[in-house]
Image 1: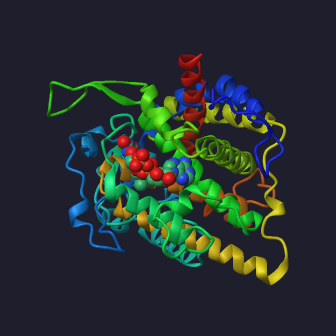
Image 2: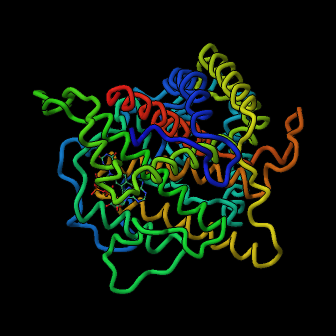
Length: 429
Ligand code: FAD
C-alpha cells in the first residue's frame, strides 16, 4: 500500500513506523479524551472578517455543511465567560481572588474594565498588546476582536464540506506560491509548484516551511476523506447524515497514480509537522504543567490538569523529536530569514480569512494558530530557559488561552490523521 510509509522522516532523526506506534497507541487515545473537555472544546474565533487580499464575495460556500454554529451564551462554561476578552494573567487573577464573582455576568467585553479590578486588568491587557506588537507571534490572534465568538468544536467537527473548486484552489495556490519560499514560475500551470520539486535550491528552514504547510494540507484532506458524507441527512436544520471513510476519495488525493507520485511525499510531510508540534509541546511542557485550565468547574479543571500532565509525560518520553536549535543559526542572515519566515506565516494566518467555507475557515484558522503557537514556542526564545517552579512575571505573558487551545487541538488533528492512515491501511489490506 502506498500509504504504508517507510524510513526516516526527512530532517528529523526518527522513523515513520516509530511515530505510528507511539502515536496510535499512546498519544491518540489520550488526546481524544482530553479534547472533549470544556477547556479545549470551546474555542474563541472571529469568523466574520473580510478577506484582506481579494474580493471574496463570490467565493462563499453555500453548502449546508460549510456552516458553523456559534455557541449560545448559556452553553459557554461560566468560567470562560469571564474570559471573553481576557488573557491568562486576568484569568489567574479571577481564579485566585475573585472566584465568587464568576457567577455574575461578566459577559460584555468592556464590563470587566469597569470592575474594581479594572486597573490591574487594563495594565495586563496593555502589556499583552505591547507584547503582540513586538512581533513575537507567528499568527494574527483575533480572539480579542469584536466579532469573535465561542465555537463548540465538538458540534462543528472537521469533515467533508464540499468546499472545492477555484475558491479552495486560490487559497492553497496563494499559500504555496506567494507565501512559501522559492520563485514563482512564470507561465507554468498555477498549481505546478505545488506538485513539482518544491525543494530545489531551498535551505533547510525554507524546506521546513513548505513541508509544514503541505503536512497541514495533508491532514485536512485526510480528515475530509475519513469523515466523508455517506448518506444525505433528512433534517436540514441541523444536518447530521452518516459520515465515514471514503477510500476512493483518499486514493484520489494520495495515491502515486493520481498525484504524479507526490502523494506519498505529502503523507510524509504530515509526519514532519507532527514531529514539530510534538517537540513544541515537549519544550513547553514545564510551562503547560503550570497552567490552571480554568473553566469554573473545580472537579473538571483538576481532571484536565492531571490529563495534561499525563499526556506531557508521554510526549517527553518520546526519544527523538526535532532539533530546532539547528535552525536559524548563522548570524544576521539567519535573523533576517527568521523574520521573513514569521512574516510569511503571519500572512498565511490572514489568508485564512479568505476561506469561503466557514467550517473550513474555523479549522484552518485553528490549525494555523496551533502551528503558529508551536513555532513561537520553538523559535521566539521565550521558552528557552527553564520555567521556575513558582509563578514569576516572565511566565505570565507567554501564551494566551486561545493559543493553548489551538496548540492542543491542532496536534490532535495531526495525531488523528496519522491514526486514520492506519485505518485506511487496514481497509486496503
Ligand atoms: P486541493 O486539496 O485543493 O489541492 C490543490 C493542489 O495542491 C492539488 O491539485 C495538488 O497539486 C496540491 N496538493 C494537494 N495536497 C497537497 C499536499 N498535501 N502538499 C502539497 N501539495 C498538495 N474541504 C472539506 O471538505 N473540509 C474541510 O474541512 C476543508 N478545510 C479546508 C481548509 C482550508 C484552509 C482550505 C484552503 C481548504 C479546505 N478544504 C476543505 C478544501 C480541500 O482542502 C480541497 O481544497 C478541496 O477538497 C479540493 O481538492 P482538490 O483535489 O482539488 O485538491
